[in-house]
Length: 59
Image 1 (cartoon, one colour):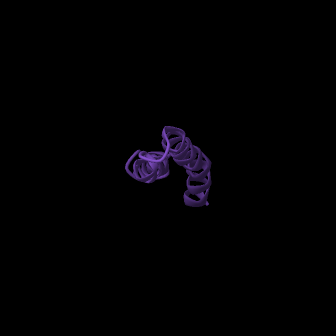
Image 2 (image 1 turned 90 degrees about the horizontal axis):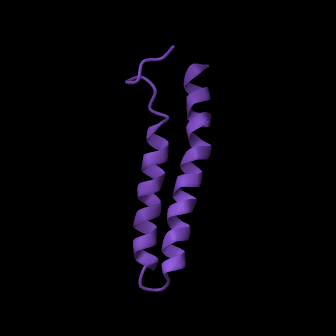
């Protein structure tokens, strides 16, 4: 079992959410739906990357 400090794969969700937020703020003046879509895309990418990063670390 890994310690919390060793496994950084959980940072992928927060990091990509922040990227989605930043991209969404650029599109905020254009469309609110693009802002929300950017956030959801960021969260989705993070949720996909987290298990992949976790699996690579355990090998």
